[in-house]
Length: 104
Image 1 (spheres, rainbow, N blue to C red):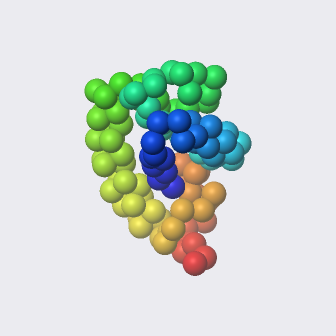
Image 2 (cartoon, rainbow, N blue to C red; image 1 turned 90 degrees about the vertical axis):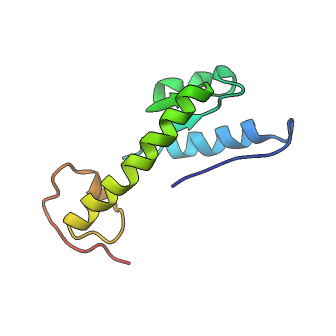
């Protein structure tokens, strides 16, 4: 899942985003990459230990975007190699025991 939250200053983006982020972090087999180059650690501070990769300035945000652009084709190729049409929890295993097409 990719999530982008935008809006006017003071519109509640941080609070809404933190609610969503907390829910996502409660799921298994999830790694969160987060970026907030404007407020940096202010909204994410207490969640930083749970975030896989945090970009808190423009330089690191650009690096995360570049990494995502590289990761998507690699993950897509891996799914295709093992016969998956979409991601399911079994895909989190480094070596799936059953290579089967995922249900649609």
